[in-house]
Image (cartoon, rainbow, N blue to C red; front, side, top):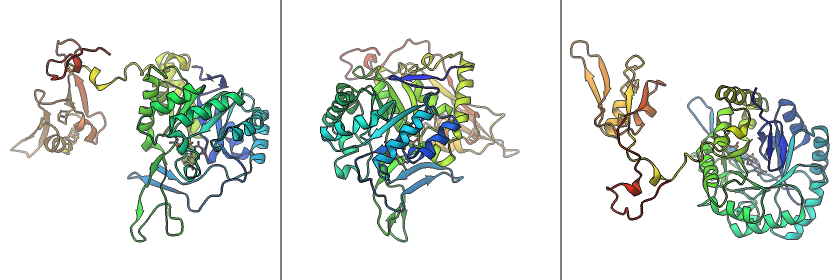
Length: 428
Ligand SMILES: Cc1cc2nc3c(=O)[nH]c(=O)nc-3n(C[C@H](O)[C@H](O)[C@H](O)COP(=O)(O)O)c2cc1C
Ligand code: SF4
Ligand code: SF4
């Protein structure tokens, strides 16, 4: 059986599945049941200075798929609404009872060194394994000069990280906001400040939908609303890209990354790890389906690693980073075409319409005059291999993309004679 244990910037855990800082980790009652279910660690719901935050009602909204599955989730909650003393006491008790699990304490404080210097010894005294700096919350706290108001200014990120490194010996994980143009800048700043790791993503600014009768967005707080933070399956592509950006960046390459955003099963987790994450954090999936989902995640990841011959997570961690490159380094001489399996085709014609109205008019719709039966065939000479027909086909595996040997060597855009600006030839 594959070994799922990790040592993430000095924090040990029996598996890479941590609950992200959010309601599932806001009290001992929850965290204990999460550990009983098998989670390798938790990032405790963000603590701040007393008095605790006060929340509004209602707080959540969502985007649904056809079967009412939640595709995207939005919240306007703040950090913990319980006192600092109560949280610290519970963290101490839980850590004592579960020494093999990782407990990281999420913190959000004003941008003043003294505030950090005051709280860090108290957090250390709990026996927690590390701290995570919440520079990501996009609602409520930025108005108070915290959360993403810090995460959007690399100079602040560096400064606060440096204060934390000065006032604690615990590993410092900097949680980044995705509400920024170039994620590499705050990641570099975190590293410059001495961060032991970064975690990302926090939630994305969002308004999910509106009540058009009352002319107010959801969640509705007595006739008004505000933007919230978007998370869940819909944000996974944004998160994966940002993780890859940091893993690929020569300035931050090798900086441990805790991947967060839309993770709901073992495959999502494996993708984050392949793009450089050393552990993953889960919030929305646990909120919607409960703590027990971790069992499927652990079993699935173990089975997949066994099937691939990976003994530890290190064996495939970051393995896809080298294959993630700039567009200009992709091989212009690579060609793939769509192939339709006539045995699987249900003759719905969706691929034909998609290719006809969008792509390259490369699918023939052949009608048997005697029977009226339609057959769909790809014109290999015209197909540009865009994947649209495969994406639109309702039968999984019916359309496959097949590589066509061109006999031509690797040639990227900087080397391509068709590039009018190809002055400097580069290789990946
Ligand atoms: C209701 C709710 C509350 C959250 N509270 C916090 C918080 O206190 N601190 C924090 O760093 N992130 C908070 N988050 C963000 C999550 O930790 C996580 O970064 C985000 O939801 C993306 O992960 P997911 O797609 O698995 O949900 C919260 C998210 C939700 C949905
Ligand atoms: S891959 Fe694109 S161009 Fe080729 S047949 Fe499908 S839709 Fe048309
Ligand atoms: S979309 Fe798929 S099932 Fe429908 S006609 Fe095309 S190949 Fe056949």
